[in-house]
Image 1 (cartoon, rainbow, N blue to C red):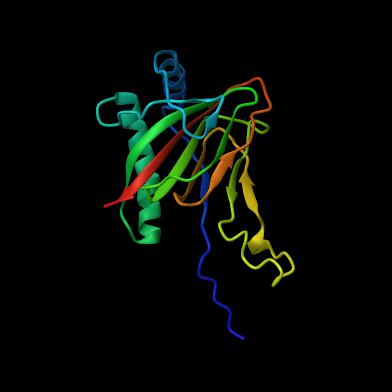
Image 2 (tube, rainbow, N blue to C red; image 1 turned 60 degrees about the vertical axis):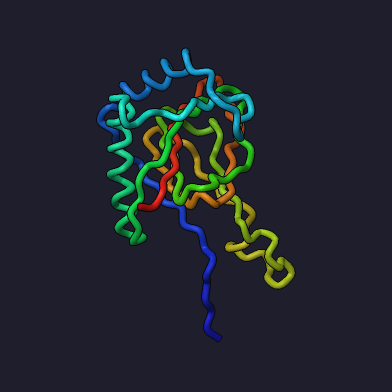
Length: 185
């Protein structure tokens, strides 16, 4: 019998080297000092206001770096992606992010500016997890979630509709990342 799989979700990842990494790290820490931030899915962590990638030089350079990687993905998936918005996340000891999606975006992503193991994996939930579980004997494509460990320089891209969360940071060192959403043009 022929089997078709229609509803899979890709997650793209790579360890990338950003030329202005130290400058970006300093920027993130400075931004936290004067930006009250927002509260979305973050529980105890800091989520900055949206960053202005058109006029802020540090963020403009970083957005061009991300756009380079989005262009590679754009060729692969045959749609042109551009950054819609981006923000900084700083998660200290025992802070996390609840399960959420990014409505209105097409592909979302995260770049780890400063991160290591035990600082809270990002976990993607299987949106088909309630699919007739009795029909199959717990095959891998029905697993409830898959997690990626944070690591400095890691870039993750994923469909914005894919439910995800970030586990608690169990270290006394801040995990710093920049997240972003894209749109199709």
